[in-house]
Every structure is written in C-alpha cells, then in structure tokens.
Length: 118
Image 1: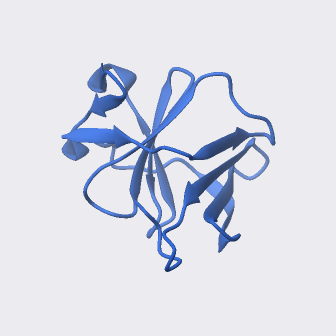
Image 2: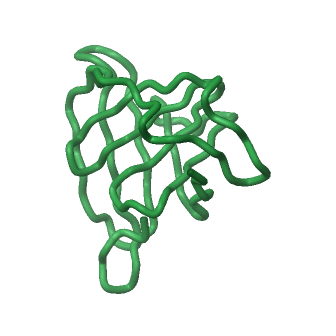
Image 3: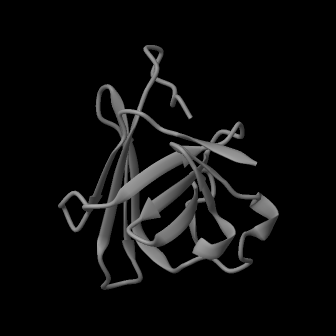
C-alpha cells in the first residue's frame, strides 16, 4: 500500500519541530503514518490509538512510503492527555506518550467545509 505525503502539515515534539519527520496518508481516512526521526508511528485518529511500527517494514519511494496495514502491531503505545480540536484552517491533535512522557502534536490541514483532508 502506498502512503502519500501530507503537504502543509506541522509536527511538534515537546513544542519544538523535529529535525527529521514526515506525515503520510492512505486512502482510508483517519489513519496517518508518521516518521519521527528513524521511528514510524501509525496513528488511528478515530480510536485515538498510536502504534509503533518496525521501520524495516516501511519502504521509502520518493516523497511517499510503502507499508501494509496488516503489518501493524496488535498492542498500541500507551498515550494520555489526547486532545483533538479544530483551530481554524487545521485540526490539532496533541497527546503525551505514557503518563509523564514527551508531548507530540500534529496539525493537519482542513478543507473549506471544516472536514479533514485526510
């Protein structure tokens, strides 16, 4: 399955932009694949779940990546303080890894009707 790059997205890790990152979407809405340095995360926005993905199963092809959803792990990463809201032209999702871990934030562009593009 090919995951296409999300243009105009913003990522923050502990309120700072990571030096190396990427955000990708598939045809199915509500699922995003995030590259954060050498780590890959599958984020299910509807279920508010985050999965750690083996980077060896993801293949970079130009701006896009190839990865198959059945390769996803069964157990999600522990996250807390999940907050999702519309802040104008973007939807902001923010959560914390574990109970006392690092914060992760992403801002995804919205269509003019207020629905997420991806």
